[in-house]
Length: 122
Image (cartoon, rainbow, N blue to C red; front, side, top):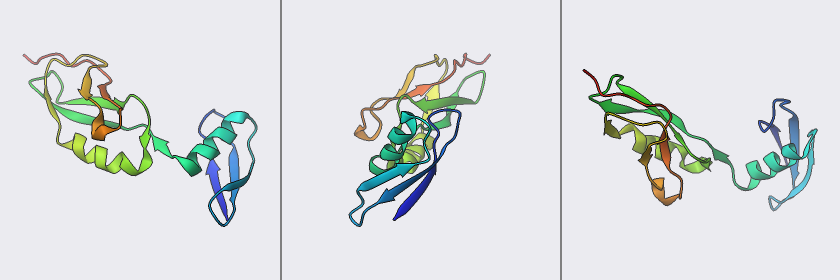
């Protein structure tokens, strides 16, 4: 079986083809121009992860929403669950950049951080 990917580890965007045996083990990876492509294809097959970016509601702030992000990529199969949890989060202003909004989300060991400061409203 073959799986195709566009590598996102560097700006080149190599078109990767990964061949798997009948048990899901990687037998070959082609199309990469550097080692980053090999690592990306292996990770996508064995442990796909994504960085989460979204917004949360700020009460009493100069802005109604605060952008947040996961400090590390989270398992891809947990992205929608985490996004659902964050949809319900409300914080009070002021908010500091890099403030921990949710610590160890879903027991993943990954924190959700504010990606900008929000002052209290007038």
